[in-house]
Each structure stands twice: as C-alpha cells, then as structure tokens.
Length: 379
Image (spheres, rainbow, N blue to C red):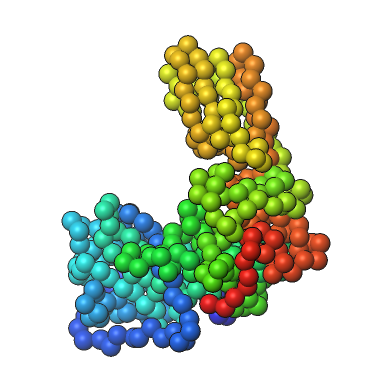
C-alpha cells in the first residue's frame, strides 16, 4: 500500500447530517482461496468507539443489509445502548442494530478508536459495552505485529523469526476460537497489534519472505509464545505455567547483550506492604522455592500480622518487576531486587533471536533452537 495514514485530524471532520440510506450493494470481501482471516479485538468491552474509512465505506447491519455509505475520512461513533448498538455523530442518530460492519472500498483502511487498520471491522455488544473486532488477512496482521513486538531496525533474520512465531501463534488461536467473538486481543495478552503504525518496510519484507510458514510439532501448529529476554536461559513451560508442553523446553538464550539482561529495583518495606496488600509491618521477604533456572516460584512475607505466602509472579506483578528471575536483599527498612531478563522466559527470547541473527544464524535455525522438536511447515 502506497498511501500513508499517519494521523487523522478528527476535530476538523464532521459527519453529514443527511447520510445515505436504503438499498446499497454490499461490497463482498474477497480473499485468495488459501488466505486466512484472523479476528482481532482492537477495543474490548468499551462504551463507545469511533470508526471511519480512508475510502468510501459501507456500513451494514447484522442481517447483511447496507444501512449507510460513509464518506471517506468522516468518522462516526458507535455507542452501546442496552445490548444494542447505535450509530451517531453526536447530534443525530443513524440507526441501531445488534451488529454493525464497516468495510472500506478499494484499498482503503479502517479507523478504529485511535489508529488505522487494514481489513474491515465488526462491532458487537459485549458484557460491559461493545467490542470492535478487526477482520484482517493474517499476513496484513503480521506486518504490524512484527513491528509492534520487535524493533523494526533489528536484523532481518530476527524479524523473520518473529514473523513465523507470530503467524504460528495467531493460527493456533484462530483454530481454537470457533464459536467465539474473536481469535486474539491486540495487547500483550495475545500479541501486540498497532495497525498501520506498527508497520515498516522491514516488517513487510520479513512477513513476505516467510509467507505461509508456520512451526509444527507432531503435525500440529504450535502456540509459539515468546518474551523479551530470559536472562541467560529459557524455562520449561511446566516450571512456570504448571503444564508441560513438549516444544517449550529450556535452552540457552543468546541474549546477554539485551539491555534488560540484568536490572535492579529498590523499595521500602512500607511500599512493599502497600503494593502486596500486607496489613502490618513487614520484617522479612523470602523466596521459598525456585524453578531450575532461578525464577521465584513461591515467596513468603513475614511481619507482625503473620505470614503471607504468595507466588513469585504475584510479587512481580504487584511490584512491577521485569521478571521473576531475581534475588533479594532485605534490610530493616528496605528491599533491593537484582534481576535478570524481561518476561515469562518461555519459548523464544526476542533478544536471543537478535543475538543468534547477529551470529549469522537463519530464522529456521533460530526457531528450532527455541521451540524443541519443531519443524517448519506451510499453513
């Protein structure tokens, strides 16, 4: 795509008060026969969302009926009202439905919330409002995911490793999501997806060069989880998540040059108590058990209100630490944390992928290193 949509001056756009209603032709969404369209929740359980199109778009309801032609670069708001969705420009309502779709014409892209996205958008009611789901070709999705998850200036073989891992992860969840509203979130709970703002020529090149490539184990596409840095060695999945996955085994990570390979943090014991929710004065914090690679599994907080046992991951989340791979030094008033790595430490280390690429390794070798017993296959 040659046009760049870097920003949208929403405050100067106004919605026509008359609109177009009636019998309009629904523009069919055409994809190659072997393409996969993934469904990504860009806005989840919100009260309203603004949508629009870079080209003339068509809005249709849940019955497939075209209800409005939306002029290019003119936004409209979708509100959630008692299990129904309302189209409005803030002054006038343009109809209600249980579902709305917006598809741009030609090579247009859609505006959802605060960003441009390829594909089209479906809006549906959710428990706490509405959810906006971007329907997008998997490689168009990956153009953004690769650049949203990994610096676009990194070596091409690292970016290609990210492309194949992210494609495998997306396809794994796409195949598991039958009957659900969407396949993936756009956040770290799935894979970070920033629409066109995440793309670059380098990410498009990495995705195109690996078109259709996925990782499989025993003939099935794997859930190719990844993280920033494991601080020396990745973990077996069962040591962190309790479930043993045969392709998620610990290996050396090659990420010693990562800026998050080692880090430090310090807190007063009073701060720790407030963050953890311990009601009394803390006297000691101890790690009771660790994974084979040194991650805190179980911890205990000891003070004048008794003993509180928590997981290492809870301690990490409450204190905002980069990982559970840390050592503690406790004084009468404070606690010092010396840690390694960033993330859960399972699967591919992204900094490790960069380190291996800088050593001349190809993306296939990088991936089979981090994902035990896998092979490169086609979708």
